Length: 237
Length: 342
Ligand SMILES: Nc1ncnc2c1ncn2[C@@H]1O[C@H](COP(=O)(O)OP(=O)(O)OP(=O)(O)O)[C@@H](O)[C@H]1O
Ligand SMILES: [Mg+2]
Image (tube, rainbow over all chains, first blue to last red; front, side, top):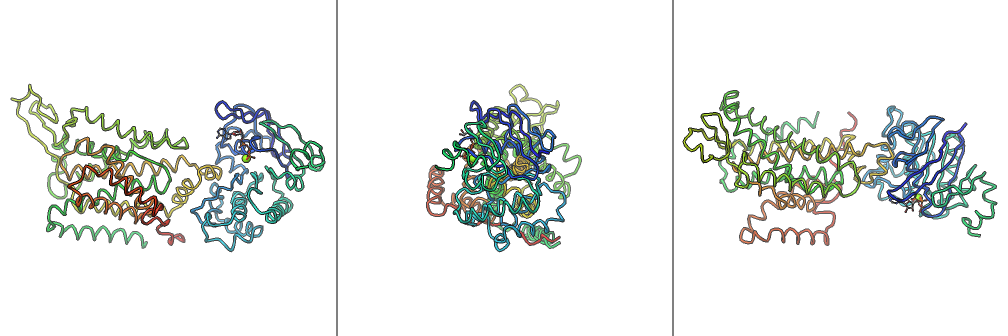
């Protein structure tokens, strides 16, 4: 059963055609990665799923139900949340308040404490910095916060936009380990956008390769990482 | 509740000071009232520009609407107010509360009309629309004879035959009339009661879950939206509340000065309010209040060179940007974070 089905999705910015008929499917409880060069349209796709952008045509199905025309808050309520590109931490809110903003649409606020404990378990460094302003965190800590904040809405599908961006390699490794752990322990489905194809393909089950608004290649992660073309273009060989 | 008690005792304090305010020299009394009005204007703009990170450049327009509407009501409908509530202290109080609300609500409605379409867009549309809006309001007033057009407005002539006008038309010079001038309702109490009200309004708002919404919108609109925050709603709430208080400030101004002119609410006035907010430090309540006080008093010392006021403001801003870009008191002050466990 697929948790997410995207069918023939077209998105424009004015006259610029950013997505030209995307088809993409994500199996429940899997990790799927979307790789591609700068300007391929990866962020555009994630923003369209979160309903921050409106498609010109096409369909987005969540558990088989059409969610294309829902508002952003309804998308979060149905169970999709995202950790946006560049992290976009609320720099004038504390770490704890940032996390609470993640639970903004939730009705069952009394369980908030359990969920805070849940994210601290994955990213214990956040717990030590609860009162600190978001803007004063290091880049890596901000990334952890962005992911944790997205988790606070208790999503079934987590969208991650370039979690490795601007972070030291060692920390990238540890963050990705937590992402895999999260998927294994809780069964949360993850759609991972990355430019770091190496690490993305090493943790994913399935992958898509995107170029100038189109999917040019797809397959299970292993076979993609062995694919000649992918190796040349994205793995630097 | 501790907060309510503090609020009520502040109002009582303002009331007590008001009992002695009669002894103040009229020149200083006038400056004091203008300080209060400017604090209301600057704080209300701070809610929009400082806390929510939007950029409104037409606050004088909302002030104009508040001033003109409430003053027109208090003069054109003077017989109604006198008949209904009398002219005792009690009747005057009721009349004035109604007139203040008329000014505030009219400005708030204008705020909805201007704000809703432009706040739905991201970017700097708000600065342009509000700037245009304030100029349009001023031009409209300048051509409206019922409020004296560019001559300004002092009161209403109500003729025996039922006609009402701001000036005596030539063909009516023989018809008997009664002239209702703008009643001097504004005093220390009313002005500073609203200073107290807006301070408590903003503190409460910012320490509620709304406050967090405002700050989130200011920090990162897209991130806030992707958390499911209805960013337009928060921007509209801040903008319309700001407009409401600007309308109140206008009504206070009109009922103190007793004469209003479209030029009182020109672009310069809007800029003056923006400068108070920037100088005080966007989003800092105390800083903006102090800046409002300073920028009300300062021109009094510079009377001789008042033509250069704009240049002085510009210089102040440049020096500020160089030396203290966060404003005089631009630490992020977030009032009242204590009473969360209620
Ligand atoms: N707000 C916008 N207005 C106009 N064009 C835009 C806008 N945002 C993105 N684009 C264009 O759409 C295309 C896709 O951009 P997008 O941000 O989705 O790429 P991306 O794959 O996420 O790139 P990166 O890896 O650099 O983040 C690019 O050509 C970009 O210039
Ligand atoms: Mg991107």
